[in-house]
Length: 242
Image (tube, rainbow, N blue to C red):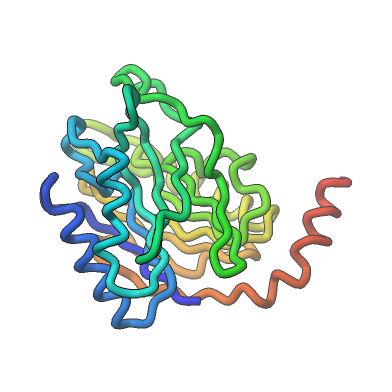
C-alpha cells in the first residue's frame, strides 16, 4: 500500500480546497492509495474564523479525480458548535468524520467543542484506520484495534520559534513508537508548518522509524500490512492478559 503524506499549509483560506485537489492529482499519477493532509488543512490554519460547514465537507468528494482515500484535518462548523475534525473520504462519499475528543483548553477557550467519541476508527478495503487529530496521538486508548493510525504532529512537541522554546520531539516520538509496538500498527503522521515547522513521520508495527522529514512537501511511503496481520490478534490478546 502506498501513501502520500502532505506536510504543507494552504496559501490562504480560499486556496485550501484547490490545493487539496492539486496534490491529489499528483498522488493519483503516482498510483497512491491514501493521501494524508495535516491537521486543520481546511479551510486554513492561520485564519481561526474560517470554518467548513457540513455542505462544504460533502462537496469535497467532487474534487477527487481518482479512487483515492483522502484524510484531511478540517475546522468544522456544525450547527452552533465548532470542532477540530478529521474527515476521510473517497471520490464517491464521506467515509468518516472524527471530531476531536482530547482537546486542549485553549481551544475550549476559543469556543470549540469536544467530540462525542465517535469516528475513532473506520474500515477501508479491509484496513482499520484510526484518523486522530493532533494531540490525540499521545493517548494510547485512541490507538486500540488500528492497522494504521494517522494524525498530525502537535506543534508544542517540537516548537522552537520566537514565541516558543521547547522541543519534546524525542519524547513524543518514543510515545508513537511504543504505541505502534503495543498495538501492532503503523503510524503515518504530519505537521502543516503553521508555525514554520514542518514534519513527516512514519513508524512501522515493530516500533521502527521508517521515514522522517523535517521539511515542507509531499512524501511517498510504502507499507506492507500482510506480514504483521497474521500475528496481530494473538499479540494483542497476550498483552491484555498480562
